[in-house]
Amino acid sequence: GARGGPADVPSVAALPCALAFCLTWLAHRQAGWAWAMQDTMSAAVCATFLRTVQLPSLQVATVLLGLMFFYDIFMVFISPAVFHHSVMMSVATAGEASATPSADGATCDRFQGERMPMLLLFPRASSPSSRDYAMLGLGDVVIPGLLLTLAARADLAATTRWLAAATAPGRSKGRRGLGWGYWLVACLSYCVGLAMALLANAYNVTVNGVQGQPALLYLVPCALGAVALRAQVRGELGRLWDGSALEPAGTRQPVGAVPEGGGGFSGGGAGGEDEPSVQQQLCGRAAAAGDDNASHY
Image (cartoon, rainbow, N blue to C red):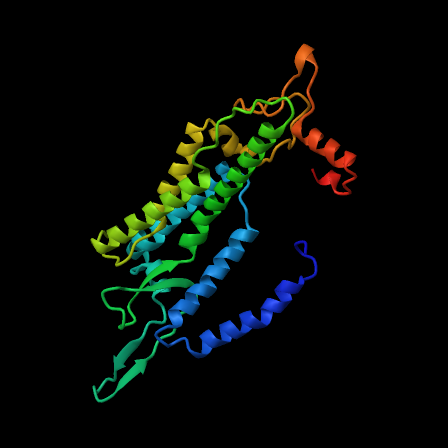
């Protein structure tokens, strides 16, 4: 159903399964395999967020990711100089198991530990049975993920325009393919940034003695830089920057107008007469076929 409307049947049917899954994790969260269930729930939260929130342009993405870049660095590396401990590391490791001896040393109070399901946990290969986990915050997924979803939408819009131009009457059939899309470039650059963060942690690269890394320090420059470079190579940086590259074929294009960047998907006809835009052609065909949904084109 539409957003804000009544829930559809699949969503209602999935609710008992989701509730049973969460209750199972709650009951067995201390088990050695519970990290897999926690990661599943965390991935679902990330997917829901990225499906709901979309950025309108590369300009907005640059501002948001840039602010989060400096925020992450401050909270991990700089905050110990202000608060005497790393705020981000304290939050990430809160609820770990601990043991506190009494004043006389005769007893020891043990706390089994509780982990909030706000992290992706991965057992370390060096000690898989000791419950020692590598951690990745959900913010390190959803913040770059906003850029990845923007890249996917740009690819979808570019494919729509390319197909519309290739199938339009009177158009040349010899158009070149789209090549590497933004989404693939963004995904590969995210993997490179994540690998850099893991290497920095493995080789103890640190500031103020913090045992951890601000992942956005590596993810933001890699992902944002790669997408911007790819847009520059394709001659679409300006259009991706203002968001017009996210528009599908025929959107807000006047009759006979040529899109910025020389896309040439609609243009003037012979003798100075304007040729109908792709949107108008699609609407005309739908109307001729008696399509009740022609207004959606």
